[in-house]
Amino acid sequence: MKNYIENLNKAFESRIRLGIMSILMVNETVNFASLKEMLEITDGNLASHISALEKLEFVKVNKQFIGKKPNTTYASTDLGRSAFMEHLNALESLIKKTN
Amino acid sequence: MEENKQHLETLTEIRSLMEKSTKFISLSGLSVVAAGIVGLIGAIAAYVYLEIDFKAANYYDYAYNNDGTTNFNFINFFIINASTVLIVALSFGIFFTARKAKKNNQTIWNASSKRLLANLFLPLITGGLFCMILFYHGLIGLIAPATLIFYGLALINAGKYTLIDIRYLGVCEIILGLISSVYIGYGLLFWGIGFGVLHVVYGTLVYFKYEK
Image (cartoon, helix red, strand yellow):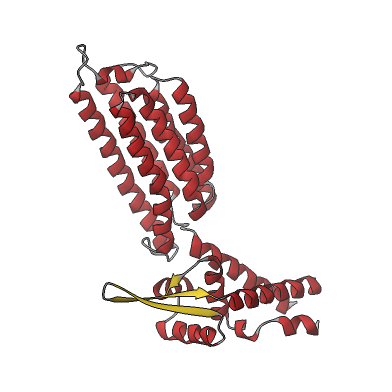
């Protein structure tokens, strides 16, 4: 039982961070506005969670301009993807164990 | 046990976010029903205009005058009829979809709806150009079957980005298009079935499955 809990990644304890990763797992790139819409949270809240994931190198940020408008897109890194998969596996094992 | 429930909830949430971020699920069944009814009215208008009965073949003979020149009244009628059907059907589609999106707390113009439209319109525009080429070659009898086939392919392509059920509609349209390209001349009848009847049936099924 202990082992499985250790495999749960601390970074994904927050539902929002887990949500950001879920979206980035199935989309190549996603911009800030779309993330905000899907997660239904405030700008500041989303920005702080993204920068936490960025620090862990789970998410890479790509800043570019469309005309004069800044358009920042986000994508998951290989490290982020494997961490997410591990976390999912751990969750699954935990559920199987208790059943 | 309580913890287990929490983990399960987390998994459900992950799955729903993955689906919501890739698929545009607000496409309303009612909009498809409306499109079908408008399509049927368009087909009936064509029959009334041509003054022929519903089983009549060779409607496209009217495209040419007796002396072999192109009958522009006929062509204009079809262009006006088809574009009116398209515009009215699209307006209904946007109206009902916007309404459902509002209910789902989704916007109508977002990454997933753009992706859906791009994937829908690529085969559709190809089909449209192909039909113009058929017309250029005088193969008018094949235009109705070709529209059905390309429309079916477009729906199957779009199925990756919206409710998966739309693929069944796509398969039906393709089968109908293929049958109709064997029985050339009954294009209007197949058109009425494909764009009218099938839409009404599919839209009703989807409405009761997901929206009721």
